[in-house]
Image (tube, rainbow over all chains, first blue to last red; front, side, top):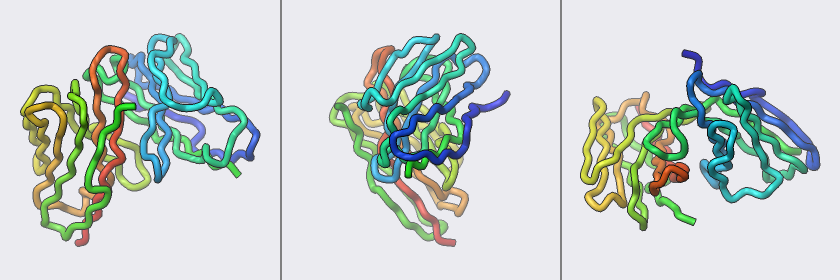
Length: 115
Length: 112
């Protein structure tokens, strides 16, 4: 079974630009969660989608948005990039939504650098 | 918002020594999961604890869930260099809408 696939692996953008990250979950997984990982803040929850609906949202500004398609693939968009958005963005899929007794399977992440 | 405290932040051990990381919450947890992230890698699920006082073992790893379901620990016996990485706890406070909240992790280094 193929794991969670994230593209691209690396991105370099300049301040003010926008970026779209993609995530393909494990086949059969309907939940996709996004996390931002930085050395200082650790793993911070961005949002979760389940069956094309946003189920949960973390404490991030509206510049961070996402969506999920009917095939469970998900995209995350960050507009008006700031230097502080530089981070590893991790996508995780699971069978069930949220923390409801369902382990998260992470992708390798997208390393975003904002200059 | 709800937070989970994980200690210590760093742990350096000699190969063969034991290692323990702790995860503490001020609020009762629904369940807790543990993940390991190798350097340059992504978090990998290790185990989930659901019941009060639960103890689970995976070879040299022992996981415990406190009686009050507010804390948990991961203990590694006789560490090996392959144990190097960051260990995260991830907690759920319950409800189908709840998301997992990760601790900041304990970074383990093992000196051969």
